[in-house]
Image 1: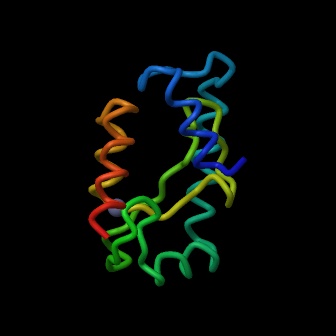
Image 2 (image 1 turned 120 degrees about the vertical axis):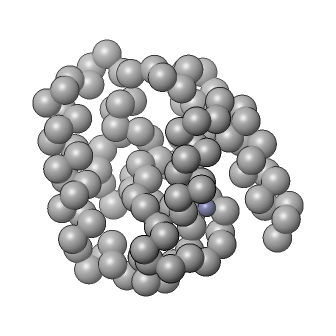
Length: 114
Ligand SMILES: [Zn+2]
Protein backbone atom coordinates (compact mmCIF):
# COMPACT_ATOMS: atom_id res chain seq x y z
CA UNK A 1 0.00 0.00 0.00
CA UNK A 2 1.33 3.46 -0.88
CA UNK A 3 1.74 6.26 1.63
CA UNK A 4 -1.27 8.17 0.36
CA UNK A 5 -3.56 5.15 0.63
CA UNK A 6 -2.26 4.49 4.13
CA UNK A 7 -2.78 8.06 5.33
CA UNK A 8 -6.22 8.18 3.76
CA UNK A 9 -7.22 5.05 5.59
CA UNK A 10 -5.76 6.36 8.83
CA UNK A 11 -7.37 9.78 8.50
CA UNK A 12 -10.80 8.29 8.02
CA UNK A 13 -10.77 6.79 11.45
CA UNK A 14 -8.91 9.46 13.40
CA UNK A 15 -9.93 13.01 14.26
CA UNK A 16 -7.73 15.74 12.77
CA UNK A 17 -6.28 16.76 16.14
CA UNK A 18 -5.46 13.20 17.13
CA UNK A 19 -1.95 12.79 18.49
CA UNK A 20 -0.57 9.28 18.60
CA UNK A 21 0.04 8.52 22.29
CA UNK A 22 3.40 6.94 21.51
CA UNK A 23 4.74 10.16 19.96
CA UNK A 24 6.69 12.06 22.61
CA UNK A 25 7.80 15.70 22.41
CA UNK A 26 11.38 14.53 21.93
CA UNK A 27 10.28 12.32 18.99
CA UNK A 28 8.64 15.38 17.43
CA UNK A 29 11.76 17.50 17.97
CA UNK A 30 13.95 14.82 16.40
CA UNK A 31 11.69 14.36 13.37
CA UNK A 32 11.37 18.13 12.85
CA UNK A 33 15.15 18.39 12.87
CA UNK A 34 15.37 15.54 10.35
CA UNK A 35 12.85 17.37 8.15
CA UNK A 36 15.00 20.51 8.36
CA UNK A 37 18.02 18.48 7.22
CA UNK A 38 16.02 16.82 4.46
CA UNK A 39 15.20 20.28 3.08
CA UNK A 40 18.95 20.91 2.62
CA UNK A 41 19.44 17.89 0.37
CA UNK A 42 19.83 17.84 -3.41
CA UNK A 43 16.91 15.38 -3.49
CA UNK A 44 14.58 17.99 -1.98
CA UNK A 45 15.93 20.84 -4.14
CA UNK A 46 15.24 18.77 -7.25
CA UNK A 47 11.65 18.24 -6.11
CA UNK A 48 11.24 21.98 -5.49
CA UNK A 49 12.78 22.79 -8.88
CA UNK A 50 10.26 20.49 -10.56
CA UNK A 51 7.63 22.62 -8.84
CA UNK A 52 4.69 20.21 -8.87
CA UNK A 53 2.36 20.09 -5.86
CA UNK A 54 1.89 16.47 -4.80
CA UNK A 55 -1.81 16.99 -4.07
CA UNK A 56 -3.27 19.34 -6.66
CA UNK A 57 -0.68 18.67 -9.39
CA UNK A 58 -0.36 22.35 -10.30
CA UNK A 59 3.01 23.96 -11.02
CA UNK A 60 4.53 26.52 -8.63
CA UNK A 61 7.70 28.48 -8.10
CA UNK A 62 10.03 26.80 -5.56
CA UNK A 63 9.38 29.63 -3.07
CA UNK A 64 5.66 28.87 -3.09
CA UNK A 65 6.08 25.25 -2.07
CA UNK A 66 6.39 23.66 1.35
CA UNK A 67 7.16 20.25 2.77
CA UNK A 68 4.26 18.13 3.90
CA UNK A 69 4.35 14.86 5.83
CA UNK A 70 1.89 12.35 4.33
CA UNK A 71 1.51 10.77 7.73
CA UNK A 72 1.72 13.77 10.10
CA UNK A 73 4.50 13.71 12.69
CA UNK A 74 1.92 13.95 15.47
CA UNK A 75 0.50 10.65 14.26
CA UNK A 76 3.79 8.85 14.24
CA UNK A 77 4.91 9.79 10.72
CA UNK A 78 8.64 10.15 10.15
CA UNK A 79 10.78 12.60 8.22
CA UNK A 80 11.74 10.08 5.57
CA UNK A 81 11.88 10.59 1.82
CA UNK A 82 8.83 8.41 1.30
CA UNK A 83 6.77 10.36 3.85
CA UNK A 84 7.73 13.88 2.72
CA UNK A 85 6.10 15.49 -0.31
CA UNK A 86 6.21 18.86 -2.03
CA UNK A 87 2.98 20.71 -1.48
CA UNK A 88 1.69 24.20 -2.33
CA UNK A 89 0.76 26.57 0.49
CA UNK A 90 -2.92 26.38 -0.38
CA UNK A 91 -3.03 22.59 -0.14
CA UNK A 92 -0.94 22.64 3.03
CA UNK A 93 -3.35 25.06 4.73
CA UNK A 94 -6.38 23.14 3.54
CA UNK A 95 -4.97 19.83 4.69
CA UNK A 96 -4.40 21.18 8.18
CA UNK A 97 -7.74 22.95 8.55
CA UNK A 98 -10.23 20.72 6.72
CA UNK A 99 -11.83 17.65 8.20
CA UNK A 100 -10.49 14.43 6.63
CA UNK A 101 -13.65 14.01 4.56
CA UNK A 102 -13.56 17.63 3.36
CA UNK A 103 -9.90 17.20 2.40
CA UNK A 104 -10.78 14.15 0.29
CA UNK A 105 -13.51 16.12 -1.42
CA UNK A 106 -11.04 18.91 -2.13
CA UNK A 107 -8.62 16.42 -3.73
CA UNK A 108 -11.40 14.90 -5.81
CA UNK A 109 -12.41 18.36 -7.03
CA UNK A 110 -8.80 19.08 -8.02
CA UNK A 111 -8.56 15.87 -10.04
CA UNK A 112 -11.82 16.54 -11.86
CA UNK A 113 -10.67 20.04 -12.77
CA UNK A 114 -7.77 18.61 -14.82
ZN1 LIG B 1 -1.50 22.10 -4.16
